[in-house]
Length: 153
Image 1: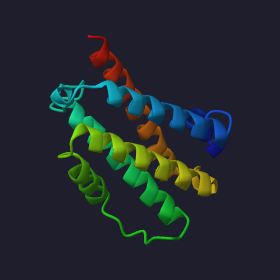
Image 2: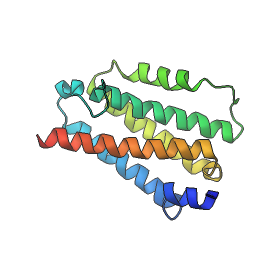
Image 3: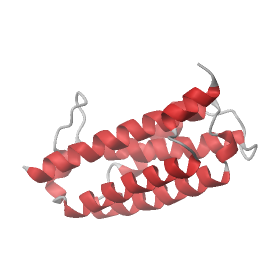
Image 4: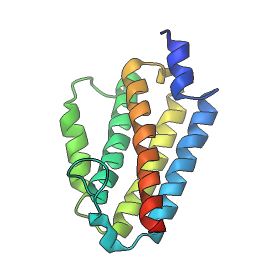
């Protein structure tokens, strides 16, 4: 599969559409989190052994990873990264926080990712960035669906 086909699968039509989708999903996540009772953070998810808190931490970790990958692609950072460490440190930072703090951090991280993608769109066709984007959108959609399910019950 060539880069154009890969890109069209992950970033529909053009970069602006992708950015709009990213923003829409993040706004929806934030709105859903604002309705969520704090006690629901320990609700189980479809991922074996994960709670909602874990899944929120994972989205924050993907934000961090995407920002680092784009910084590397643009030449602003060394390629010597331990990706488990990047994700683990991000998850560790956000996981113990209260729901309101998690929500604030996810909102801020979303803005940072949006800006980074917007500033570095020429690097979005790189395979490692495409893979991270694909995982990010899939997992964000999954989280959104899970939150909607929790709030409807």
